[in-house]
Structures are given as structure tokens and as C-alpha cells.
Length: 315
Image (cartoon, rainbow, N blue to C red; front, top):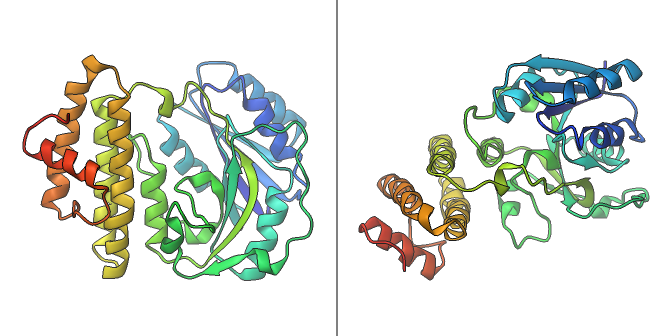
């Protein structure tokens, strides 16, 4: 039985895939399986995966019709057999000690998840970390507190910066058919109050892929996807303690709305009217749900939201 299952969704990344797989196979900890879900990739990813699977029997390939990143992750997780699970995007790569360090932390602390950091720089030769000291691990039973941007011990709203105890996330699924699926998944996880270990080691290398969703022009569909994620969080936290819901409403929702606002302003001028209409529709629904309090928003942003709610365009 592998100790860790590494789930790698694959689509349109032939330029990056070999580096990603090499970084996984070069881990200092060796007892793992790699579940590569080929999500109907139209390029040579299938050929690359087949070559690597012949070279290393820890690599398993699952091929499906193109259903999107969420469906690929869900499928991979269902096929996983490891005690722990790690998600790696196929255009990124990881530090050689990622598995070794996170496994040591999660087993020593008996945590449900281990959160670590990442960086955008691409080092030619990674620096190896010394033995991890207990003082450099933070343990908490209330991880929501560490989802703030200004926390020195930080939990990020991305899926790939964490090692998970697989049975703890067995009942969680990624929302399929939407973009920006990471933040509703992580917030659903936080609602379960996992025992969480946090380390500051930068163990993941995030590649700023020009073809990723964050680089595509914003469309009304993307606004609706953001809204679908926020509505899912709203439904999840209605049954949680009031303290948790207040945190999400005053910290998480304002940040997600601010992201959308900035992306609309950076969009082409001729595209903005439709984007403002979609955003105003989202704001009206959040207002009805009680998810748009003044507290938590910067005044200049809240003033823009009020203008949109009144049917006026932002200045």
C-alpha cells in the first residue's frame, strides 16, 4: 500500500509535464503512487504519460473525456489508495523534500492536513531543508483564523499547498463545471474544523502558465462561477457555528468580491458593461442572503457595490 497518493490532472501541458513528473519521481520519500488523470488532453500528454508509466510502475494513468479540472481531481481521488493525498497541477513542480517533510509533520502531530508555502520563482537547484524543528510547526484546531492574508502563519486558498489525510476528505468533492473551484473546496474543508499543522517551508513551485484561467479574459460566465462558489460556501456555513460564518462573511467574501472587481477594471472597455451587469446580479443575490455587510469591505469598494445595487455604473 502506498503511503501517499499524488493526484495529477493533465490537460494541454505537454510543455511542462515531464518536469512535473520528474520532480515527483525525484522525491526523497519513495513510498507513493502517482495518479495521472488525462482529461482528454488534445496534445502529446498521453504519449508522455505512457512513456513515464513504462519507466516507473508507481505511475497510474486514467484517461477520460474532457470534463474539466474538478472532475479530473474527483476521479483521481476516488482511485487513490494511499493513507494521505496530495494534489499537484501538471504545469507546476515540487521540492524534492515535499513528501518527506509533510509526512513527518502530519504523522508526528496526528493532524488532518499539513499546510505549506509556495513560490513563483523557478530555482535551478533547490536548497535542501535541515531536520524540521517542532518550534517551526504551528498546530491549530481552528484553521479559519490563519486564512487571513496578513497572518505570518498562512493557509492559502489553493488545493495544492496541502497534504491531506485521505479519509478526512473522502466526503468532499470539487464543484464540477465551474472555474475557480479551489476556494469553495478549501472553505468546505475548513468548515470541518480539521486539526491543522502549518509550516512555512516553500515546497511547491507554482508556474505562471499563460494559458491558465487566471490569464484568460474575464467573461460573465466567470462571474457566475465565482458566484456559484460563494453560494456553495453560504450553504455550507449555515449549519456551522456563528463565529465561523461571521469570519467567512467578513473576511472571505470581501476578498473574493475584490478579486472580481479588479479583474473587471482590467478587462477591455468594450467588455465591461456585460461584466458589470453580471457582477451586479451577483451582488443583489448576496445582499438578499445577508452576505454583503459593510464590515470587512474597504469603503471605496463598498461604495462601488452600492452604486451597482442601485443600477448605476462605477465611476
